[in-house]
Length: 308
Image 1: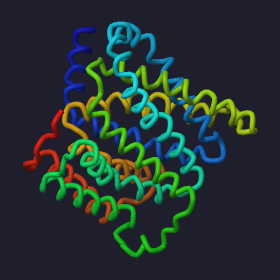
Image 2 (image 1 turned 90 degrees about the horizontal axis):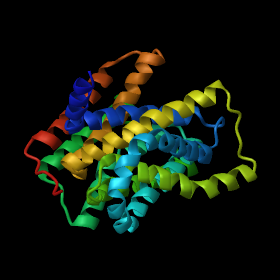
Image 3 (image 1 turned 120 degrees about the horizontal axis):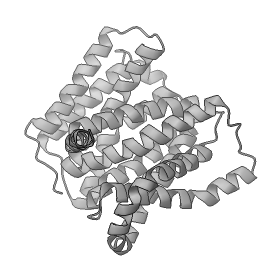
């Protein structure tokens, strides 16, 4: 039985498209749950509990890898701290704060630009340009996302109003795109070592911010709603999502991985249909087809692999 589990997990860990698709599924739930938490759990509290909780869950499994990789971790400490600050601390704190002050459609519109942000950072950091196929794929995926978010009516975009929450959420996407590009330069350590270090260091960096936030009165009642919100965020978007995301980028590179983030609004709309009773419509089918076509073209249609 143990051998079967290891074989199945090994195959999953070598399937980048499935890993990145599942990451988008978990992160779509994170956007929905993060918006649901608005006014109930403060954003700094969500971020701190998210990463400290995920670290405590992962630590027993990560200790052997951390001991083995510690010399490399010490040598690559500046890079790892940079990954932690951008991928854990700054990005998440800004995103949850923004979700407390914006609408879900605004957040999804802003996050749909992720492949473009990654392309920009890839050029700045590595002088790497998109291939023609990657560019076509990103444009198709973006059109699909906009079709779903606007319900097939482009005039909806004219009615969207942006405020300070949108600006802060947009900044979180810029920061996360930097992380999603920089992770390409990760040190040669086990993925669990990398994730455990980032989670633990992130919790340490967030500790004084959380303490100051509590001192200023930002507290919450740990009722059933709060517990369920935090349990989901700790287990899926954090622990599993980041592990899958990092591995997917490791296998195919940031530019080819980026279009998969366009699945986030796809999964978000599907959740609305399944759990909120929204009716599927033609624009859903058109949007899904455009996004999936864009992802297929970006990853299969002659796109050159990113240099590892």
